Length: 292
Image (cartoon, rainbow, N blue to C red; front, side, top):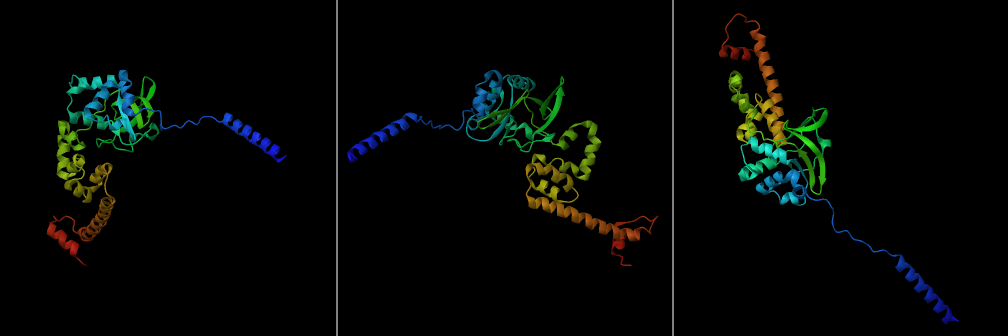
C-alpha cells in the first residue's frame, strides 16, 4: 500500500516539475548600459551635417575622449557654419588650422558638464567652457520664430540632442573666442582715446585688463586694494576666486570706507570754518590732529 502511495507521489512530483519547466522563460541579461551613441560617433554618423566639425575635433585630437564615458555639452556647428567660418578666416579647409588653433576652436564649443536649455538664462551659462571663457545665451526672434542665441554669434537650430556621454546643441555658425579685454577694446577705438586716458590715470584700465591673467600678482592686488577692488574683483570672480581673497577684499573695502569717513569728518569739523583759504596738505594734517 505504501509502495502504491509512494509511486503516486513520485508521479505527481514529476508532473509538477515538468509544468514548472515548461512555464519558465529564458532570462535575457543586458550587459550594455545604453544603446545611445557617444558624441563623436553621433557627429561622424551624420556627415551631411557635421563632417567639418568632426574634422576639427580630429585635428584637435579630442575624438577619443568625446567618444568615451563622461559628461559633456557640445555646441556643434553645422557644415554650413564651419564653411562660413573658414571663409571669414581666409582658410581653404579645416586642415589649414594649426593644432593650437583647432584645439581653441573646439574647446570654446565644449563644456565638461551636461547642460540642457532649461539651464539657459539671459546671460552666461553656469559652467565655463574648456577654453576658459563663459558662453552667453539669450533668446532672439528671426522671421517670427524665437530661437536661442549663443554669444550673439550663432543660433541653436536643434537643442538638447541627448547622447550616451552628454548633450549636443546644434549651431548654425562657429563661435568666436574673445581675444581682447574690455580695456583693450576701448583702447583700440580712437573715438575713446580721451576715455582710455582717463581709465589709465585713475587705475581702472588695469582693473579692466586683468582677464588675460586673472591669477597674476597684479590682478590679486588690484582686487584687494579698496580703490580698485570693486571692479577688479568682479572681473576675477568668473574665473574662480578663493573665499579668503573675496572675504579680505570685502573687509578691506568696508574698513576703507569707515576709515576715510572718519578722516574726512575730522578734517571737515575744522575746515568748514576756514572758507576762503587755500589749503595745503600740511594744513590738512593740522586739522586732522586738532583736538579742540
